[in-house]
Each structure stands twice: as C-alpha cells, then as structure tokens.
Amino acid sequence: MLVSVVSEKNTDDVIRRVNEISSDSDIVEVGFDKFHSIDIDDIKLLREKINCPVIFTLRSTTQGGVYQGEEAKRLSELMELGAVNPDYIDFEYTINDGFIKEFHAKYPDVKIIRSYHNFECTPSD
Image (tube, rainbow, N blue to C red; front, side, top):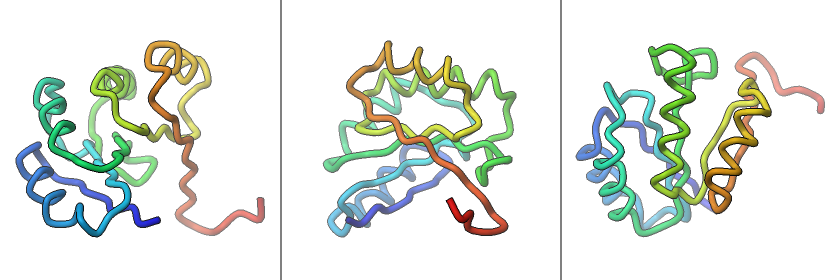
C-alpha cells in the first residue's frame, strides 16, 4: 500500500498536488499544519475532489509538524476536520484519551490512527 503525503499552504495547492500523485497512491495523507487557517467549507470541497481514501493530520511542532497555534485551538480544529468525514484522522499519542473518545463519539465513521513519533531512535517495543 502506498500512502502519499501532501503538505501545502492552501486548498488549491493541495488539490493541485493530489492531482499530480493520486493515480500512484492508494491513500493520500493531507497535512493541514502549514495552513494559516482552517476553513471547513474549503476543506469539504477539497475532500470531494480527492478520489481515494484520505488521512487528515494537523501536526504540532513537537511531533514533527509546523502548526504554530495553541494546543487547545489545534484540538478544536482537529475536531472540526472530523465533520469533513475523512477516511482516517491521525492523532498523536500525546493527545489525551478523553479527546479521542469525544471525537469517536461525534464521528464514529472516521477511523482513528494513533501515531508515535520518535525522531531519535526506533523503540524496541
């Protein structure tokens, strides 16, 4: 399975990039951490134009992303992204279980990925 990662600054650039790579990808991961703001209506249009399964991410700087906002705002934006109905959403292991349960209750059809990022080594477990 080939997952292609797209991380651009706006929806137009994401759509352009996805069109360039989507025929070669089984899944497209769209990272929104470079966006200056999250406009759900634009994201809905973006989602409609992606013709394969999609993973949404909004990665903080502590987890290898470039999102500069406060953590509470990031979590709020992640919750909003669920309304767009991505196939998957990627939450870092640092996000508390209460938030994950709330998200799952609100968007039960969105599959959740819990990711762990270790930039120094590969853990034995």
